Image 1: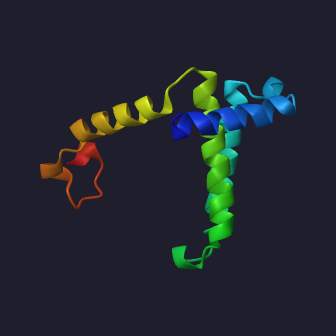
Image 2: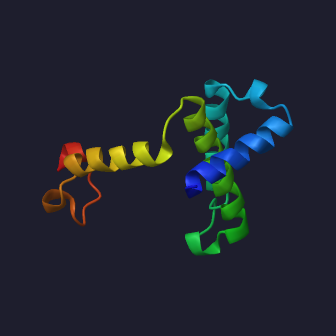
Image 3: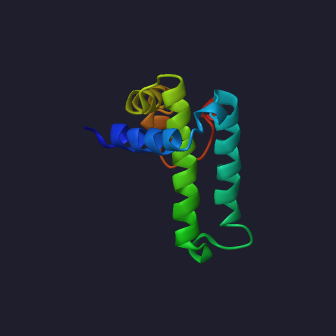
Length: 109
């Protein structure tokens, strides 16, 4: 079994044991993902990246990933496939010859 599928199955088991699927509609999963992303940002607030508490970063990043995986599952999306497809799209928008070493948006290259 691949790692992503194993993670999603563990998340679904945890959710289902608590009867939380009723709260996990796509809108609320997206909101939760955004809230957890904000909490991840909070770990860096008023600090350099080196000063951020790595345990807090790990906890909040795990929450972000968990809600992202649950949202993907809700729509029947294959996480590996959609990420690889996005990398392909970005490769077209950001060709190495134009974008290497640049932080410019593709519309500015």
